[in-house]
Amino acid sequence: MTDHFPLTSAEIDAVRRPLNRASLLPTRVYSDPDIFKLERERLFPSGWMVVCHVSDLAEPGRYVTRHLLGEPVMAVRDRDGQIRVLSNVCRHRNTTLLSGEGTCKGNRMICPYHGWTYGLDGKLLAAPFMDEAENFVRRDIKLPELRHDLWHGFVFVNLDGQAAPLAEALADLEPHVAPYRFEDMERVELKRTRAPWNWKVSLENFSEAYHQPWVHPISAEKEFPADKVDYRDTNNAYSLFLLHHASGGAFELMTDPVAGLPEEFLRIVTVFNIYPYFHCLTDPSIPLLLDFNIFSETDHEMVWSILLPAGSKARPDLDQLVAGFLGFIAPIMAEDVDVCTGIAMGVQSKFATAGRLSHMERAVHQFHNWWLDAMQAPATGGQ
Ligand code: FES
Ligand SMILES: [Fe+2]
Image (cartoon, rainbow, N blue to C red; front, side, top):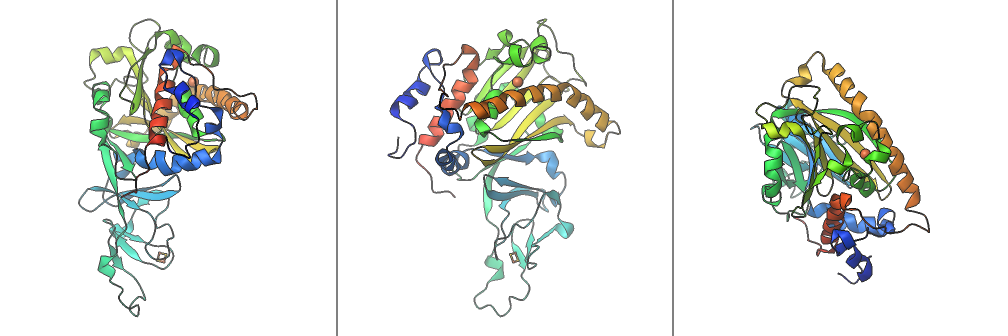
């Protein structure tokens, strides 16, 4: 613990205890701007933050931009088909270079401010009216390239360059995820929800099924009851639990199961988080993804997507398929938003407390211990 670490030893000890004796993180971690500042310095840069799925970068020139806790980055597929994650800040007067997502015309990125032009590898190709600037060496100028890693079709970035490779950190998760073949799928965005509460409230909500009988009594609870959930021990880089159908048999699916999925996967829904905030819940056919845009200690956006088999974006009935999926999931999401809205008010109360945990909140306990590890680790200098 550093001198300025914002939790007391007693608060840390309460979280560090085994699950059956542990308590939650103190409630100020959900609202204190100084704690959020420390998260921005330590927690997010040291982890792997998802940027996009490879299907968002289908051809050379395709790009996606993100603001990751205030850091503008872009993922782009270069002319050789390689994926690069680059700083999205122009090397002249620091405006953001690209916006949204799309295709770079002529495989070039042209700054909207004064026309400095970059190649897809980030190298500066042209800088108009800079011929009188002394010692200005155009070919020495390049957008900083950030360390990225591909994991089952997702592009992740590690801002401080120090994190263990994802395949290493997630080796134990591999057998639970590989059969779904996310890398062969296409991402389709479903819905965005602006959430005026701390990002951890949302992630914790999707880390346990304990709430299902009360929050989702006629949907999720009927299909995969809370008391049949199988929470797994993990190595602290992720959490994992498996949902089983109420009947003990296979799940009813909206589309065909993933080709080649082992038979035992037809009877489970796999739920995992990769810290800090990537969340996935997948039945045997359609993975549901949750990504975050985090703006402040009490403001974030939840971005919901699904993965579909390659070629699905061109399906003429894509809209109906998406509408059908949303018809099932949107009411559940709304029920979750209601309880999270309640937490947003409750954690600011002078009577708020770091309550005790159920054995059905093992992934919340794992998350809190990961959070402490990341926050207590010495800050790294970045890459
Ligand atoms: S800020 Fe990009 S060219 Fe001036
Ligand atoms: Fe829920």
